[in-house]
Image (cartoon, rainbow, N blue to C red; front, side, top):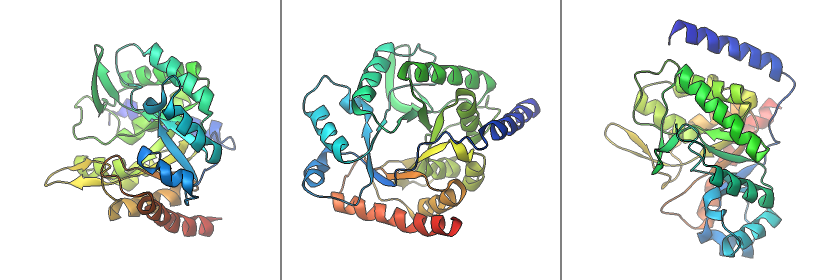
Length: 300
């Protein structure tokens, strides 16, 4: 890392620790949740699965009434709900999409989620949506740009947002910070929170050759509001974040490390393709409980 950039990050961490001490901005942990999927509605509405909360994909419910909102309201009556988006494109150089933000605010006002999240990435430029979560260069210029946009989004929504680390397969020569340092500094400058995707940390650590535990050590404890756990596909050279398989053993191991560092954090498992029956996902969620609860009890 460039020496000046490193010194700036160290100074920022010290200031963050001083100002945040005794002033934790996080929402109380919700427990263990799942991504809300239409396939599971019948089982959800007919029973009482061992699920503490649900994460709904924002874009699926940014509509004017109809079955999507009606079903989300039924879920919201019984469980806490958080909103998770994929279209904020917080790192793009395009202007923020004011229409999208207005629809997101309207949805949040209706649902009253525990929180709203999106990804630390860009998804398009010149008005073209690439429908992918693209990584950023980790530079001072990018820090200033992203932090200012996050503050603007939070002003519109009138709430803190969470930013999620994405999996990546390429890196920029211009980067002067590590991904974890960049994420931590964005959260500090914008006064936002972090959705820490443990699977994505594992995937990117393998693909770029950094240590996943060191990454977690560089994330400020008081900024982490939520964990994601998911599956991936391991190729000959790269690991690809697919969300179409059970959580892999190395990710469970990293999750245990994360719980020891960050404490009680709302945890959920994601499955976006090859979606199994609800009971199978609940069993996977039980494994998260079985890993986390003894660690939390020992630390109490």
